[in-house]
Length: 119
Image 1 (cartoon, rainbow, N blue to C red):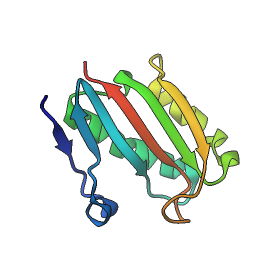
Image 2 (image 1 turned 120 degrees about the vertical axis):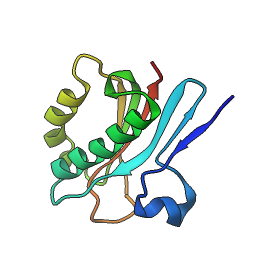
Image 3 (image 1 turned 135 degrees about the horizontal axis):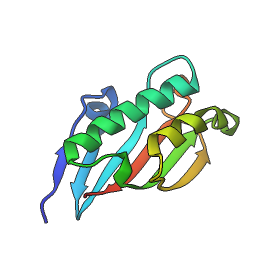
Image 4 (image 1 turned 90 degrees about the vertical axis):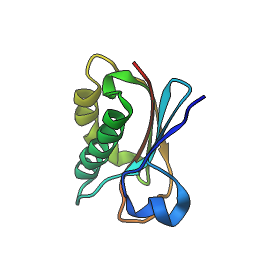
């Protein structure tokens, strides 16, 4: 089996020792991704852009997503992201889970992890 690693150059990739995504076994596994911005919606949009770029580099798109997990330090901040997520996944929504937990830095309001099937 061939494994392809995709790096985005994010600050934590080198510090922690991981890559943005791994293509293996017909799937694209995208690491938990935080975004930049002042609000949870800004950060969600930014994280989705990073994830979208990784999917593109792997030869996939959001339409190929099969599972997504959202991590938030405050579950009440999830609802404002719903319209953006519905727009992103459109008619091809993956299964999803939201977990309330601490993130690597208190400035982050959402982290998104995604798995997609290669087309």
